[in-house]
Image (cartoon, rainbow, N blue to C red; front, side, top):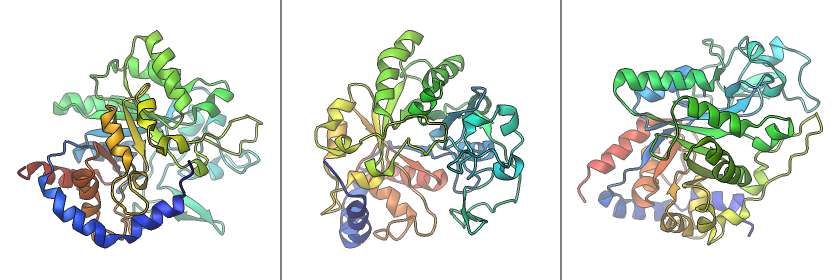
Length: 365
């Protein structure tokens, strides 16, 4: 099965009248307990994966806070969205000449001590030799100094706040590019699980979901690694479009990493297969819609029938990021929580998404 990313987007962004009718008709009877997942923290307001963004997300009342995890040269677990440093730090200025032949600066080529010397900032892109923010309305580049943190530093922060605030805010770690790490001799999954165990995350009753785009790695975690460690955490299968090349990179050390095919995950019947090794799915939000009608397709229904949670990504309020079908970000979130009945949303704006969720919960059946 091959699903066009363009057809999904086109249908989703254009059928505004249909969305308006469905939204008004069905949101009012929602009693959804959907969880609010702070995507890389409160990253709509502060640089993604900074400890400041995580503390802000906590204060905003997110139910879970996400950690993307990669490894350094000396095997430190870093909270960083990609295996690269060059789009969120000043690595090119501090360590010139240490990019690989593809022009990227790999976190696994630097020690933790070296990485701690870097300034982390809002995500940016290089255009004509200038750093340009990906989301211009967000925290300005160069306004303050943030640092890359380790997984242990972040868990200490969240658990410390849970203790002092009397709350149970959860964590949502993602194991990034496990095949790339293993090809470089780094078993990132085993390292992450050991760190989680050290902090007391052991069972499905704990406030933690472990996510990954790599189905083979999730199966390994479920069937091999967790049993050996005496752990039983909830696992989530992230779903990408195959042509995104998720987990791939043009690496300069000759590491062979095969691209992964996600088409089978979008086909009817996939939920039962995924439920054999995971407790949830994390699809890109347009994947849940019928490309012709923009109403829910089979994925949510089949996932729930198989006992899977559905946590789509990513809900952003930035200019141009709210689909034209909706007047406001709040309508966008309400449609997925109230109408489509997803079990949670990844969002860069956890405060605003929480207001929507709580409003829907307060409405009478």
